[in-house]
Image 1 (cartoon, rainbow, N blue to C red):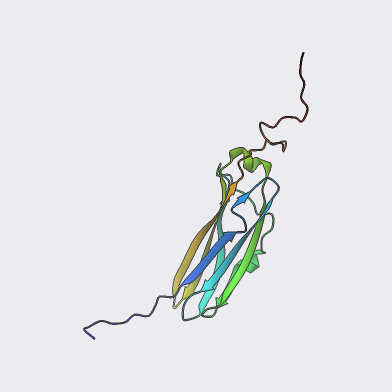
Image 2 (tube, rainbow, N blue to C red):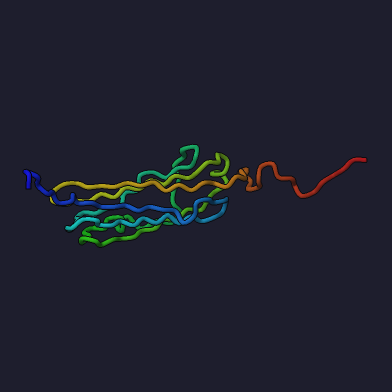
Length: 151
């Protein structure tokens, strides 16, 4: 075979991480879903989902409204082709809209295969709508609903 040797495909763990909507507004709930897939031909051990960061445009650290218990982030063993799914949620605040831009949630998955650490990471982005809100909850630049005129 001309000195060529076929190598087996290296073990892979794949993280697919998405938000349920591309754009959100104040008060909306965003569901972030992580699928962890063993895309190799063998077993993966010590598989774990690791939340890396969750920030708004001002790089303020955000906390998920709901998340799996810490123990559920330790997935354990995944057989070849097997997958696991975990979800997180967040309610967009008025403070997030002061900065506009987007929310960024970063996740990583790690595992062991044949004595070596394997990993994958992925970020999910959600743009905030174009109407910025004040901390009082009203749109900035909105009229108060009453108009006065002087004659």
